[in-house]
Image 1 (cartoon, rainbow, N blue to C red):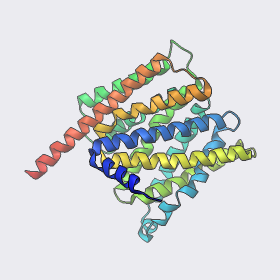
Image 2: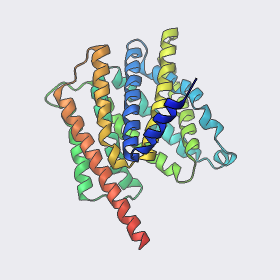
Image 3: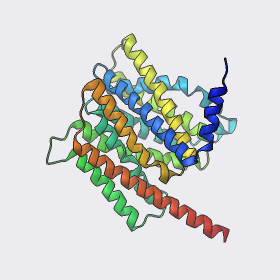
Image 4: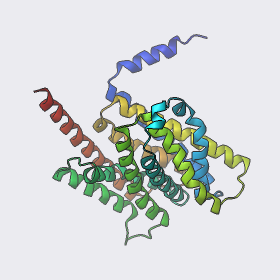
Amino acid sequence: MSFAPLRELQTRFSSISPNLQGMFWIALSGLVFSCFMAIVRYVGATLDPVQTGFLRYAFALVFMAPFFLKLRPSDIRNAKLPLHALRGFLHGTGVLLWFYAMSRMPLAEVTAMGFTAPVYTTLLAALFLGEAIRFRRIMAIIIGLMGALIIIRPGFAVVDPGAIAMLVAAPIFACADIVAKKLTLTETGPAVVAYLSVFVTLFTFIPALYVWRTPTIEELLLVLITAGLATLGHLLMTQGFKVAEMSAIQPIKFVQLVWSALIGFAIFGEVPEIFTWIGAAIIVGSITYIAHREAVARRRRRALAET
């Protein structure tokens, strides 16, 4: 069997700009995450979201094996376990809220509201990591949060408990990201990824016991697939972040909303409201602007360092 066409395709892909490559990886990760969310939504109709969340991370430990194998003795000796545990608790809490939201809300709405997490991350980075945040970024944060309010329209529509869960989950995920950023200053990437899987599994185990019922073979297989899809999605997204500028790839995240809308319509007959699209566009626009300002500031600091 000849691999020449595959090698030629790889060569052509390598010849395009890094930003376009990053956009491709982010768009592909959006499709994978949308498929993951659809399966969680389907399983959530019969299996409690808390149990689903636990099983997803328990199965993910299998897919995390390569990360565990990359751990060095120093990763174990120097691990800041309290910070890893804090991140696992925060991320696990966010996951349970997210899974609950997916069991109640259209996929497109969950996706759109999930876009607010980077907005919260920018704000928290200024508060806890001492990163500079000026007026224009503050306005971008406010506008991004307004986009979330447009989606749920409190006072104009009945706010679903799932929407409230997502409103709480987004800043919790942002807090977990801030802890992860502090950990990456002293620990390797594989260690940060591996410990997250372990601690999320541990923290979701006890809540899962309270709602536990023996899952069917079909449910176990579907949750196993979600674990694989989530791992693949994170790897694709990481590759996009690695090769492209953050400001360039932020707008392409909007494609995930398109994937979620198409899958939600095809499987569940969900039709997103116009407010979902408007709110998501505002949120992604604010994220893109924040990323652009960060890129400008980074280039300015680099230029000053070289002079």
